[in-house]
Image (cartoon, rainbow, N blue to C red; front, side, top):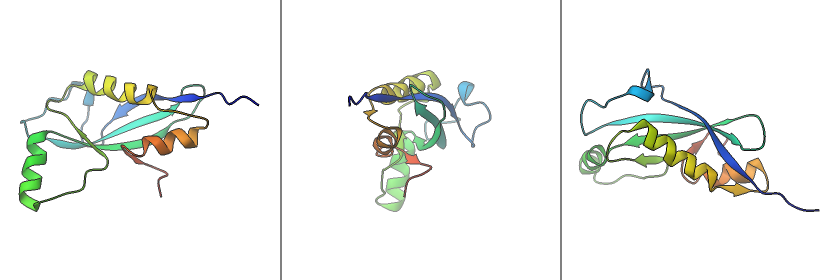
Length: 119
């Protein structure tokens, strides 16, 4: 039996915090919002939710200064908000995330983001 590797495919990106994320312009250099990526197998239907706290280094610096420390899993840190660059960045992550099953791939992606089925 031959195992055929599959990889992930980014289906869409939305944010519950922003009405139209594709044209969003942050009000300042210090921004943070929840980004939701719907990702599924490249060779099949379906998608699952992976969430990133998307923030700028200025926001991160402010929060760390305020709290003195913080955890970082699930953060996507970007020096400027550019929807197309973020989409390309996440698409590249998906393309290079391979596995023998969707569950294996999703577990690998959950190292970077909060997965809806993560324990």
